[in-house]
Image (cartoon, rainbow, N blue to C red; front, side, top):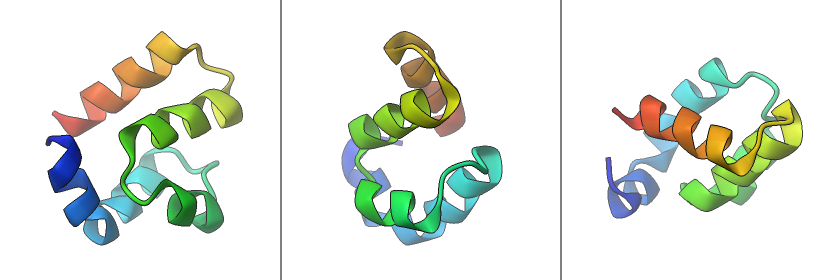
Length: 63
């Protein structure tokens, strides 16, 4: 799923994102709005991941 598709389908995808990463709040997801970099940043913040770990988690989620 590329960046544009993620933004376009964000309302459909954000439930799955919150299911996988339950520490992300509705407010977090509203701010992220399908921006993969913002999502990776929130994963780093909430889960204490490195940038590389967060990007890898998101990449695996997209596939």
